[in-house]
Image 1 (cartoon, rainbow, N blue to C red):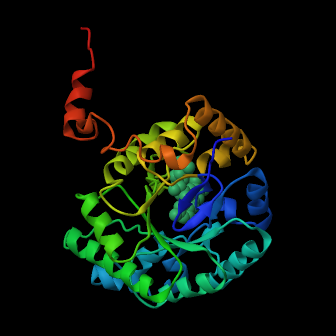
Image 2 (image 1 turned 120 degrees about the vertical axis):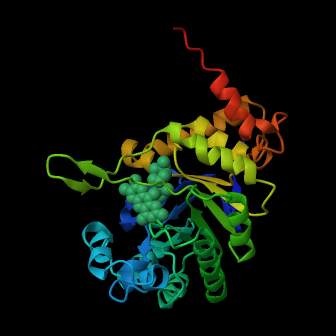
Length: 333
Ligand SMILES: Cc1cc2nc3c(=O)[nH]c(=O)nc-3n(C[C@H](O)[C@H](O)[C@H](O)COP(=O)(O)O)c2cc1C
């Protein structure tokens, strides 16, 4: 029998399949079904900073110097619909989920500014969360706001969180940094125990009939795996931290690629929303079969074996690959 166990954020997990932050954790019963199906850990849907401080909007005063009106900012944030969970109700639900299942439960905060709202990290910890995932997402639109200032702010926030809670912290990042390795290292130095790559962005679309901007949520496909795969391959063994791969994990091969690149766990949302929770046992059976038929013994043995340091062609992950890929396209006029 292949050993599927892995360690993520110091948590010993029975396998590398984790349910990513999503509506899958909105109900205690769904999390119980995820556990029965074999998922190793669950990340809660996020509690947004704006849900905690939406009236004071500390965030925008801090970063925007008042350059956008509160009304405009207010209309953007997810204050209505299913994301308007009140912060206390979120913490209460987390407590109920913790009591209902044995697998680790990871709380999730989504925000970017330091300030009073991070007291909810302590409440999440007190409710029994095994770890906290911080989703850092800020779309800079002000030309006066420098990347350095924004990054300093992220680092300060992680440092402040580190001081306020004892449970492990994972930081979920976007791929949009000029020097991802640098910010990754700074976040780890500030106290992050894990990096979750990558946050998936939902770009608003334009409705030409009504002349409005419309939100558009599409689920991922395996094609989107390549971006986090490349970056985990590059960062693994350069930055001493656990990696979680999110975006594009749909099949057994996707899971294996994530582990080989250096991820400790592979997280899934789209595929479970699309195919249902019944897909988890299929993935686990397929994973075990893959490992034994390729003569590996464990996930630990496979981890990072195709990371940039381990493959012969290290340039495959860098600029040389870009040139090679473009050159490989054969156009027949
Ligand atoms: C409907 C839906 C809701 C989501 N809600 C959250 C959230 O609250 N917090 C968060 O960090 N990510 C959220 N995500 C992003 C997922 O956790 C995940 O990172 C992303 O969907 C990419 O993984 P996938 O390819 O497996 O879907 C959500 C995704 C979906 C589809």
